[in-house]
Amino acid sequence: MEVYEILGRYSVVHHIEEDDGIIVAVVSFPEKDFLTRLDEKLRKKNYMVKVERLEENLYRLVIIPLPGEKPGKLWIHVILFLLTILTTMIAGAFQQGLNPFQGLNILKGIPFSFSIMTILLFHEMGHYIMSRKHGVRATLPYFIPFPHPLIGTMGAVIRIKSPIPNRKALLEIGAAGPWAGILVAIPITIIGLAMSSIMPIPQNQPGIYLGDSLLFKFLSSVIVGKIPEGYDLYLHPMAFAGWLGFFVTSLNLLPIGQLDGGHILYALLGKNHEKIAMLTWVFLIIAGIFWWKGWLTWAIITLFLGIRHPQPLNDEIPLDRQGKWLAIASLLLFVLTFIPSPIVVK
Image (cartoon, rainbow, N blue to C red; front, side, top):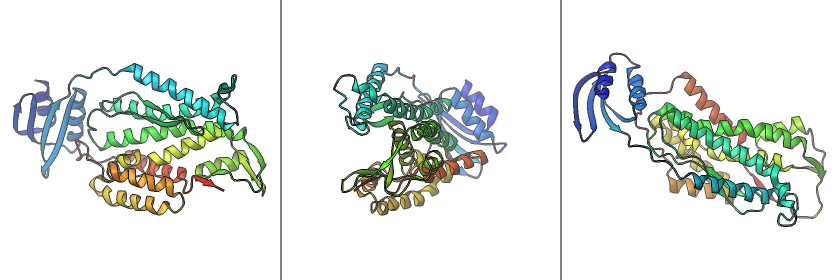
């Protein structure tokens, strides 16, 4: 049987038993990296491997065959995608002071819709492609239409349908979304900023003002330059979509729970992630001083979903140097895209 052959090739088997297709083995490894090779080989053969360290260089493996993958209902993804295009086009028209239900005004919402949908699509496909690379079963993105006149969507999600095998997979799946999204959000932001306008701030009139992340502020200073006192930058819909893309990136990269940042934090620190995750939760409470509706809401959501991150099947393989640098760079991306006070009403 192929599982026994793989075990014999990459480990020293001390005990093995099988019951109803589930194999339990106690093994040790002749070389340090053989655990990694064994894990990769078994996953390629569609087996999940739960690894438990018994003592130094002695492990208990529970090897479970993955059931056949059921085809998803593609029509659900297509309908949600098309509905979200519609709601974001409506939002894009509203942003320009137009009635999207009058004439062909809804077509004016295409720049915003195209921009935000592209950012969200790249973000979620980053997760999806990296999940498939590591043998983790995941759905195509579910887009979430939201009939709001400013944003038109609540984002998109994929569903992970099988356990994540190890910390390397956890890191790469978690980091792929934010990096794929930001790589398209930056050029979209640059194009949008170039088409934005500097206009006088209306006197004695209430308005909604957007806060700046370090990355958005830097791009604005390069593309637009210094804004005179008494004036403000009125964002083109593409620039606003880029701003939203940065904001969504920072929300996902919060190092807590099962957000993308939580995946990355656990991959980097393992079980030692809990203190940082708890500090992040306290940070959200403190950040509520600047944006109480938003950050306190996120504090409640993350508390409900869980501050701690569950461990992957194999927690014994640490990140290599390249993985550690990717994790650190991803947490730095969180700092560059974070906005203490995203929305201010004056």
